[in-house]
Length: 164
Image (cartoon, rainbow, N blue to C red):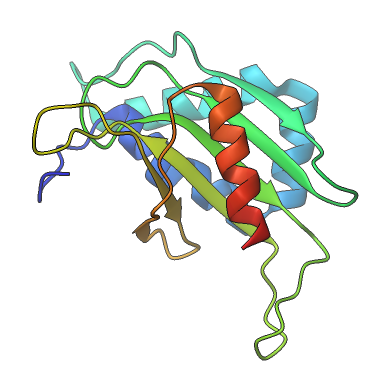
């Protein structure tokens, strides 16, 4: 990806709004998504757009979600985003909630994780979607996993990353 990525409504939504909302209160986030999912997502899409300013707002066409339960006490919200138009925009975002997960390293809690499949282009100009993680501190961590930009392939990549 290029060294500087021009911000867009889609990038701001995926890199800031969703991770901030989710990491701070995952229980409430999942409850709101289950109750009023599309309305909830579109509201925050619109809020991000208002901050972007005139002319930079885009339609939420394609914004949708699917809730999955891969294992007991684990929830994954798969958010489908409007079709990416530039590098750094995402096809999908997964919001992973594992309320009882504790890693073995110093008994650190690892209950939330946000993964996105971003539109990226390699040096030859070929599309090469890239899986990235958005941390609690809103840092972008590229992962080595690549997959085709369809929901089921993305979900399989998310499940593979959850095992790690």
